[in-house]
View (cartoon, rainbow over the protein chains, first blue to last red):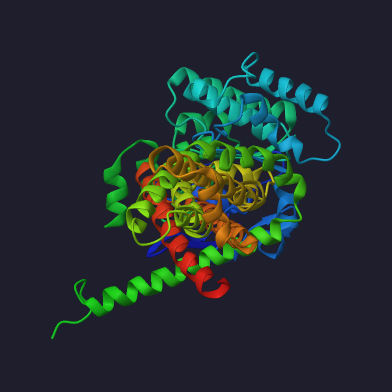
Length: 246
Length: 261
């Protein structure tokens, strides 16, 4: 993403946001709630269009693509939504197989096998015929992850994958993110405000503050960072952030 | 002199007019996108039958309920109005003409704007605020082809069918009422029914109901698609879908009467 600006009415959310993700890495973007992390993520798959600036995936500017071009890019990307965004009217298996139906060369049997494989990976075997309303929060997140990886994407985007989960389920999801990277070799961007989770899953961590990336570095580097804004966020000290604002 | 306050009637009226024009423009954009999505038959084709059942078949009970009682009331009121002044067989004429030309299409349209329009707006609105529509897009689905096209096509196909069925049942109810409560005979009722019957009337009713089906489903989809916020937003969209589609139905009713009759 290059110098991306995005405003909703008078609310300027992204103010020159730039981010480069290297192949094969897992990059976490952290920041306070409401700073525009999810907005930035939605730009990466063309769900939102920047007011200014550009978003590039595989050397293609999303702004230059027609709908078909955008769909070609989206087939390479899996998106795990904050609240899973499973389709209410479909079963877990139908949800997971939804993306595969759009792809050429996938018959019904292939889709059924792939769905079973993905549900096994996220430890939801046996839940194929359940509807989303019958799942717990953690199971929904895992079903959402299964749906995102079903199409064997090159890139995975996680929007707050552990928000609202208990510590045990959070660790389970974090392990799944790591396992997914190891087994599928995907490039991932994880949006989170959970620092423990970011330390566990990320190769690099970027902190979003006031619409721009304030800091970028490894988990070790961010823990050693002296910037009061970064320290205020990772140590949970709002007074440091307020001092900066003053 | 203070100007530009919230209470400035000119400003409020102007803002309301601009908002309405913008909404109509956005609705037109969605309709245009729906036409563009028509070639994606693989996306909407498998969903069409299910939507036809939801929009049409599931609406039959309420449509028939309304039509039955309307037919009964029409027969009784016609008899009350005509007694001593007009031959009683004109009851059949009035029941037939009003059911076919006006009450069948309009009452069914209004009832379905509540049942179908509200259902579509609430469903799509919930999908919007829970990011299910975004999820469709990330899975490389065209949400207009997947969600809007099958619903609008189902409305266009099924509304005329439901209206014609409801109209027929309304006439049958009027006939039954005439026999049982007005001491009319079947030949008398049929004489009146045939007297001014014109096959064009049925086509007119079908054209009207087709336009109502398009209106109710496209307006429902539009308000569902543009929902913001949470449960309150979904509630607001549902209400707006019903109110706006009901108003448009009445405007279209007058438009078709002025242009086709």
